[in-house]
Amino acid sequence: MKTLDLGTVPSELGEIPDLMKAIVIRKEREGEPATSMQVEEVPVPELGPSEVLVLVMAAGVNFNGVWAAQGKPVSVFRMHKDPFHIAGSDASGIVWRVGKDVRRWKPGDEVVIHCNQSCGQCPECNGLDPMACSEQKIWGYETSWGAFAQFTKVQAQQLVTKPKKLSWEESASYGLTFFTAYRMLVGQAQVKPGDNVLIWGAAGGLGIFAIQLCKVLGANPIAVVSSPDKMGLVSELGAEMIINRRDFGFAKRPDETPEQVKKRSDEMKRFGGEIRKLTGGKDADIVFEHVGQETFPTSVFVCKRFGKIVICGATSGFNLEFDVRYLWMRQKQIIGSHFANAYQAERANELVHVGKIRPVLDQVFAFEDTPKAHQLMKENKHKGKLGIRIQASL
Image (cartoon, rainbow, N blue to C red; front, side, top):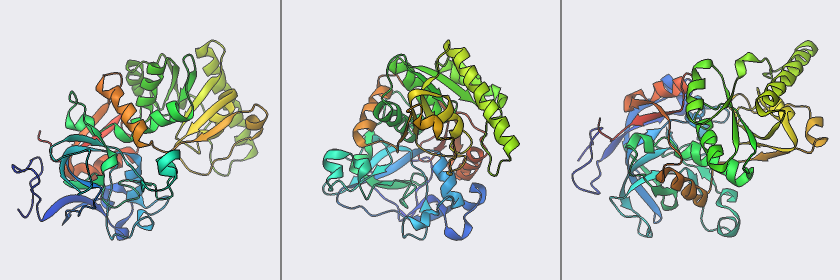
């Protein structure tokens, strides 16, 4: 079999074509996702002893695909030696072949892929946390074989069981963002019942799961959105306290004048007042951060004394400037968080299986429209998650 048609599953389990279709990024065309990502035919990856080949039924779109396409803030070609890059850190599919040392999975198993790769042999992997592994990588971003292809290869430990009640597209939409939110709130910030949790980007891929996790944990989500049309979604997910950030002028900009700093400071205080108005006079116990440069000074300011700011990314910029007096004098904590380990992914996935957490899939795109989907995400013209249909049929 030379090639495999999209939207089909080979009749013989384990049958592999000579070439597979993939959405490919190359160094010489890094730039806007709409032009950087292009359909190509490439060889199917070969497996190592502890690796699994997955027939990709559907994939999920994340912001790291936008970064990969642009080559910013760091080119993915500095992270691996292959001449091409297949992005995508979320997928659902069918185990197609397994390496000789794989015991937990067999061909035909229906799975969801989580994106943490680690060596499995170092002391950190075997006693501390695989996320502390010196060889830790995010599959589909720091590795060349990602989700936007007919086949992908992963470590056997990257797989969790696909929820039976979800479609392939829904199953491909939640891994990266939900498992990240789970580690942030459950593992790192250790949210308790009754905590007030300020959630930036509450209608986005991370925020939709942060809201739901807060409800499961008995905490109170304060959902921050960027437009009125997103309020309905976060309300439906359980957020009773909602703020439109566009009603406030607290966004941090580079090279501010003293007058602009004063105005931003006043807006931060006004924003803090709105939080207290919604909570009955209380500040945020925990701030769920991933926006970065624009919002971080406000996050530090509005967090309560002895509160926690947990951060996993910075989509608006990585250079964070804030008044550190609000941090040390009020004894707040800044906690970094990065994806999740396999145990956390497994525990989080159980919540999906029992229906306590549900994906929010905004749109599903055809395989060839993968660049378009990433362009929409770059321009913040989406709600919830975006999916890509690959071998799943209509």
